[in-house]
Amino acid sequence: MSDIKTYEYVWLDGYKPEPSIRSKIKATDLRGTDKGELNDDMPPRWSFDGSSTQQAEGGSSDCLLVPVQMYENPTAPDHLVMCQVLAADGSIHPSNTRDAANAVVSDEWWFGFEQEYFFTNPDGSPLGWEDGEPRPQGDYYCGVGADNVAGREISEVHLQACIEAGINLTGTNAEVALGQWEYQCFGKGIKAADDLWMSRYLLYKIAEEYGVGVNIHPKPKTGDWNGSGMHANFSNEEMRTNGSEKLFHSICDKLGEVHDEGIASYGSDNDMRLTGLHETQKITEFSYGISDRGASIRIPVYTVEHDWNGYLEDRRPASNADPYKILSHIVGTLTK
Ligand code: MG
Image 1 (cartoon, rainbow, N blue to C red):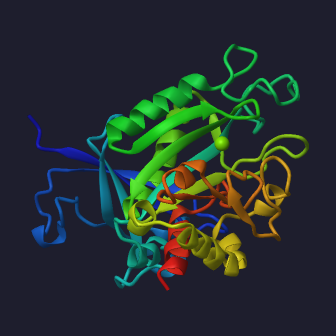
Image 2: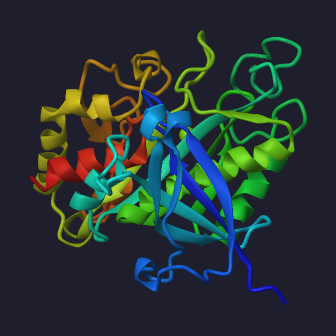
């Protein structure tokens, strides 16, 4: 038996406004590794060519990959390894948004992200749109039948893969537009954001096997078609166990005071999606309300019915938002 194990290192590149995901595989028996480098049984640090990922100049191109979260790999290699990026001198790389989130968030903060996206054909059109625009929206949300859904098999394989990897997906459904899907990803503390990035990675990779792309732009199709968001449900210990109407209103008010900062952290091109239509509030306005899907922040009926113990749903983040930035903004604002 070989002692060789394989580790699929996954990291975020330096592209703007949002990073893309990169990966490469290391095969090693870990011999020759400085054990001092290994923390919590993580595989060793590794390096990559930052000049190919908008993270370094060609003359001095090495960047460092520092493993931060490990997952069982439902496909070939033994493990998936989420990494953060350091510059060659060991300092936090400017593209590294995880470090700031990790500095403010603790495991008492729980997040449930509702990741929406479109599957796409090789020409970029949504899956199911091969013959032009399909019938208007209406039948597709949670729909069934070949003329009402496209991409179900990939969505279901992805759900199982995430569960096997130890990522807490709590559900998936066909969305309002044909070829559009959602999954819900729950986690605590910084792992919530690591898991969301890894779940996206698995989605892209699994869809690859079907020759299908994934589009997480917030408005891939203009006109009377829903955009894609990433509603961020969140709570802390006090909200869950010692809540009150006053507490929830004060949290909403605090986030409202820095609405512009929030929007800046919640993904690019979000103005195309937050129009006041299609269950959104306008990007220039901030509001909150009980059970209000046209508000910036929805106070769920669950929270009110549990005597103001529960969670809030920030409906502003776009589908392409960086979850590290969402954590930084929400927790940073509420712990100031
Ligand atoms: Mg949805």
